[in-house]
Each structure stands twice: as C-alpha cells, then as structure tokens.
Length: 519
Image (tube, rainbow, N blue to C red; front, side, top):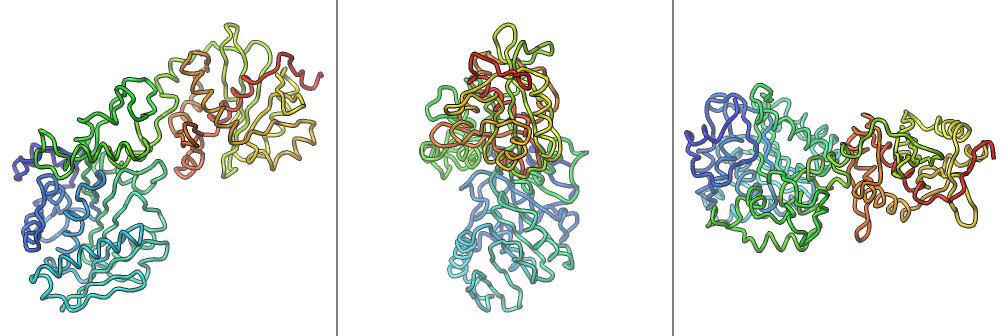
C-alpha cells in the first residue's frame, strides 16, 4: 500500500503544510511513531508536522512490535531536521525505549559522527530520564559509545570499507549522509544485522550527485512504490521532500545568479524542498528565506540545486544542468542529413579504456555541420585501424597544429597518448587536445546547437549517451563532459565527446582539404 496524504489525515497528519514529494510504506498495521514522539518530549525535542509524518512513515509496523520494512530511508534538503528530529531520536528510542541490544550509527565523515554524538551527550546530560539509565559514555579512536546499565550500547563510527565488520547482531543500523554511501560500505555493514531478530536499517541524506549509485538505487525503489503501489518494494519505507522540476524561462538556463526566470530562485520551489522555511504557508518556520537566499549567493548552482532544492544529479535539472537539452537535440535531428565533401574525425576513450568511440563531422549543403557517430565498440585496439580506414576512404580537412598542417583527427591528449606509436606506424599523427581546447570544444558544441548550426541523424545509441551525459564545471564559466561521473554510474557516453571533438576540428579546418592516402 502507498501511504497517501489523504490517508495520513486519518492518522493525524492533517497539519502537514509542505507535503513530501514521495512517500511509500509497505503493508502495515500501524506505526511506533507515537511512542517515539512521546519519548522525545522527555528530552525536549518537539518535531514539527512534517517530521512527525516522517517518523510515522519510517516506524511503520507489520504487527505490534515488528517493523514493516527492513530498510527505511529519508531524503530532504540540508538543515531540515532529519538528523536531530528524526534519525537520532529513532536510534535513541531503539536503545532506551524498544530494548535493542546493539544500535550502530555511521556517518560518511568522522566530524559528522562526532557532532551527532556530542548532540546525544548534551541530551543525556540535560535529561535525568536518560542519564539515570546510562552506565558509561566512552570516546576514543573515532569510536563513541553510550552503554546502558542493561549492557545495551549505541555506538558511533565513521564509515569505511572495513568499519563495522567486527560487529555482531546489530539490531539497528543508521546510515547518515547516505548520499555518500558506496557498495563497499554496505558490504561491510549490512551483514552485521543478519543474526538479529527484526533488524532495521535507517538511511538519511540529501539528494545524491550523478555518481551516488547506492542512494539513487534506494530512491528509485522508494519512488516506484510512491508512484505505483503495485511496484512498491515490500522491504522499504521511503519519504522524500524536494522541489518539483520545472523548466526555467531560458531554454538552456545555466542557473547563474540573477538569471531571469531561473527555477533556483522560485520561492515556491524553495518552499517545497524546505518545509522549515518561513513563509505565509509556514509562518513559524525556523529558517528564514534570507538564509536560503544567502545559500544561493554563496553556493555554486550545482550544489544549491542538489543540497537545497533536492534536485538529483542524474535527473532533470539535477546537479549538472544539461548543456544540450533533449528537446533541443530532437529539434536538430534530420534523418536525411548528409555530409557534402571532406570530414573531420573526433576520437574519445573513457578513463577506464574499456571502450572507445569515433565521431565524424562535416558540412551539409546548407552550410550547417553534420555530426555522426561512426563507431563505438569495446576496447581500444580497433581505434587506429578504424581511423586509418576512414582516412583511406574519405577526404579529410586539415587543421593547423602549431606550424604544421595535419589531418583533422583530434582527441584528448591523455586518452590518445598511449595510441600515438600505433598511429605513427600507419602514418597518422592526430592533433592532441588539452583542457583548454576541450573546454572550447564543449562550449562550441553547445553554442552551435543553440544557434541552429548543426544537425544529426538521430542515432539511438548517441541519443541514449546524451541522456546519460552530465557536465562538470571547469574554471570560471567553462565545462567538460563528466566522463568520470558517467563511468562511476556504469554508463558509456564516449560517443558524445567524440562528436564534440569532431565538431571542434571542423570549426578549426583550413580551406584546403587533406586527401588522405591519395595526397
């Protein structure tokens, strides 16, 4: 079942002013949230309506005293109280209220674990109901522990590939800063819950970047249930606050500060993602709109979109705005497009060198550039032979490389460097592009698409690569294709940089063509 806001009102959540964007619980008979909230009043924590809804969702029970989900996850913007008002009280309730024997709290950074532990210490010192049941509080070597007189423990550690492997029968595991989770962390920590009776794993974090593989997978499972209960994961309860994505006024808005019609400056979007922000909707909110605006002025657009609006790095409007939006790509498609005359060749090899792509560019009869993926394939051994074949069969433009005119064959110097001896053996010397030229190539491709100077034939493989491609900012205003981000997500986008490089070569061609093997 999906826990809708209409049903929440029956559960006492009709005071929620900023509804979550997604919420899902597996079939449940109730929630232990009421007990947790009552427990929180003992040490002075009073959750707001949205936090109470989160507690209700994340403490869903299949039957009294049994959790409905093994994993519970919460996504929302920074400084909304997910740690202090939801996750920490939940871990404390496991220890003081529900009688769990071993409760483990992990964070990505040691400083975050330290900060949360310090918060807990302050709560214990200020509440006799808590302190009278504490036997000891120890701290050292990055491991903080609260031990009750019953022997039950709450431990705080920073995550690593090995941290947690020594634990046995962990009843409750919290993974704070979940946007930084890696598979090795899960491999070290999740098996510690295997022997526990009715264990629970709690995750919380802000939106993930494009390479946040673990967190994105949790998000997709949670959203699936929210959108279609029949597709819901029965092992997961999920709640997410965030701003709905709407297009900015400018078609290819780069979210610069002061850009008219930019959605990063839309107060409605900001409120959707920040339920603690004061407004006419939330007059008693803790965070001022001026604070959110200060974040906007101080943070880069990518970080603001991800951390404050909860725009995920792999989604629409995410942390890396698409330099060539899908609708613009589709507008520039022409299945009948053809090159008239000579060509330029662009080569791209991803950092893994597990694959490579060769792209071509040339002019059409109307003077626009034609871009096409000639070949993409596994490995790199085929690249030199493929380029040599194209040089033998087609006329190439030439470009100036220092004082020498060379055939218009270009690629990233770091990627092509290892292949230069093989190219030399067949009489070809590609032009190697450094960072400055690659930045120029990316900006030039973006400008050419915007100014209607380019066409492509709609190759599905290339379109899929564009959908997966993200950019990374370089210097003050430049950008490059995010090769490592894509590789970390298991996506090969090499065809896009290949045609980008080919387009750069075309824009730098000399008037005289280089006639390949016939020169």
